[in-house]
Each structure stands twice: as C-alpha cells, then as structure tokens.
Length: 194
Length: 194
DNA sequence: TTTAAAAACTAACAAACGTTAGTTAGTATT
DNA sequence: AATACTAACTAACGTTTGTTAGTTTTTAAA
Image 1 (cartoon, each protein chain N blue to C red):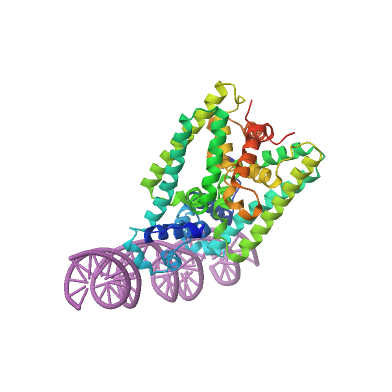
Image 2: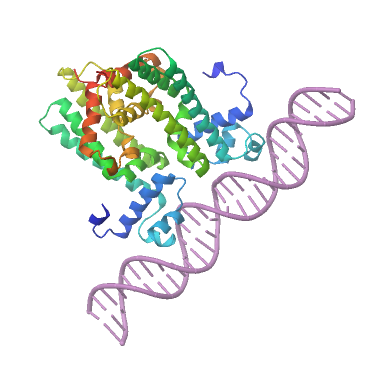
C-alpha cells in the first residue's frame, strides 16, 4: 500500500493520520498535539490545512458515507438477482473495510462525536442507506428469492455482521478479500447449519 | 424497569448513569461534571464512591466481561447439541444486550479508553471467550452439525452480527427478546436464501 | 441529645485541551 | 534580486479537564 501512495497533500496526510489515531485512541482520546506529532509538524501549523478538529472527523465520516452511497446506487440498477445484489454489496463492504480500515473504524465508532447538526445530517444519510438496502431485501422476498424473514432484522444482521472484518483482516492470514466476502456471504445466505 | 429498581447504592447509581452518559457521548466526550449533574451531586462528591473516572470504565467493562464468561461456562457443560449451544448463546447475548444496553454499548465502543494494563487484561478475557466460542463451532463441524466453514469467520460473523441489537431494540416495536433471538438465530443457522 | 461517621459542599490546582496571533523560514515567480 | 505567497514556527489565550484539600451538612448510633 505505501508504495503506491502518490504525493498526498498535507491536508490528506493530516486526515489519513487522524483516521489512524482516532481509530486507535478514539476521537475524544486523541489530541491535536498527538496528531501533529504523527504528521510531523506543530499543532498550530495544522490549522493552515484544516479548520478544526471537528472538521477532520466530519470529512472522514461524510467521505465514507458518500462512498457507501455511491456503490449502493450502482448496485441498485445492476441487472442481477436480488441475492446477487446483496452479495455484491457484502463484497463491496468487505473491500471498503479492508482498504480503508482506519476511516471505516472511525465512522463506526466515533460518529457520536459529530456536532449535533452534522450528526443529524450523517444519521439521515445512514438512514437512507438502510432504507434502500432494506428495499432490496424486501423485493427479494417478494420475488421468492429470500425466506420471509423480518426485513429489519435481516438488514441489520447482515450489515453489522461485517463489523469485525476491520479488526480481523490481515494479509498474513492468507484469506483474500474475495474469499472472505464469499465466506461471509455463504453464511448469511445459507447459514452455518449442515 | 425503573419501577423494579431496589435501592441502588450511590456507587451503583454513578456507574449506571456513567453507562448511560458514556454510551451517548463516548468516554472521552463525557466529563465528570456532566456525570455528576446526572447523578445529582457535585463532581468532587463522587470521589467518595469511586476512585477515578477510569475506575468507572473498568468496572463497566469487566463486570460485563464476567457475565459473558459466566454464561459461556454454563452453556459449555449443558447436555445439548452444538447448534443448540450456539443458539442458546445467541439468545443470551440478545438478552444481555437488551437488559444492559448502556453497559454493553460502552464495552463495545469504549474499551479502547482502558489503561494499557487493564486493556491487556480485558483483551485477554475477550480472547479466551472467543477461543471457547470457536471451540463449540469447531466441535459442531466435527460432529457434522455445521458446514465446514472457516471457524474464525463463522465465529466473528455470529458475534458481531448481534451488535446492532443495542441500537435497534425498543419494546414498542412489538418484537420480544425471544422472538428477536430466534429470528437472528434462524438467519445465522439457515441463511436468508429461500 | 450528644457523638461519630458518612456524604455532601466550595474552592482551587495543575495539566491538557483546541485554537488564535504574530513571526519566521522556505519556495516559486517576476 | 526583489516580491509575494505558502507553510511552518513559537508563544500564549481562555477553557475545560480530572482530581485534591478542607469544610460543612446530613444521617445514624449511643
């Protein structure tokens, strides 16, 4: 990964280091002075590139939210079956989690540190995402492709069942992203029972 | 729930309010003065009942860790099939999450604020828990009750698939704890595919 | 009713926090 | 070589933080 990095702007570097730091210590447990040290400049100097500590968190959260949304839009219009759509979304989630482990972790754990106003916006986006994801499940049930499960329960079970990936995945485990996505999909689609 | 509360000691009240506050604002986003206000005394007065802010977090985390462990020990020796053991543990998790939503949320999200030393202890307990949970899956596979899934993947998919319950459950939804546990179990055991 | 202990209070500390102001160093353009 | 701009620096600000010290009030026992 680091070998591929092409001249990150200082702002991007700050946000990237912030993702790493917030993931490790939490937003509330990370100080601007800690962060500055990781970036390699003084805390005050960072304010030439960012407006505030809050802004960093917002950028991380909304950037990731946008990516999730974009992929959902793409999947919605694809001409594949409903189970295939869900599997495609699972695969995308797994990939995004692995490729952006720091940022995803921050979104999942530290969105509650967003300002009231931004939190409302964030929750609204997330809500919309869930509704559209649920719609795919719903249509899949109507089409007879899924069992008649409670849609909310299925939705959240699927979405939250992916949250451990961020903590678990290492290339050294010898499980590729693709295999991982397939295995998780298999469990959610067909269950663990023989 | 509040109607059943029997004279909570002030220490218990502090920890209970702390669970609620930490869940809402995060450990790093909650001040002792905030907490004191919820408890109804001055911040300084709390120190007659607790040693430090850290101690509160530790108590919450290790208390819940202990409860998870205790239930696992019980389930391990029960004379039921491996799938039944997993389903029993899922049902217990769901119940614990619902009955202790605040504390469970804090454990899941704020354990990273534990001191280095206590965090090592906490992780060690959690690790042990996961190993023993995995052992049940493993034996279930050997017994032919489960598919030959990757044990780690199954383990973490099951465990983390329950994390949304804390955010979703309300009595007003008309889904009982028991129904909820059954529906989640059904998905994990048999999948959503028709 | 006196006494002792428990639990609350006020006041304050030292440290850490996010952030601003003012200044200096580096870089690119004319 | 002079100019202008960017990005870094040092110093400090006003708060807020967790916590301690010392004092007063409340509670319970004798």
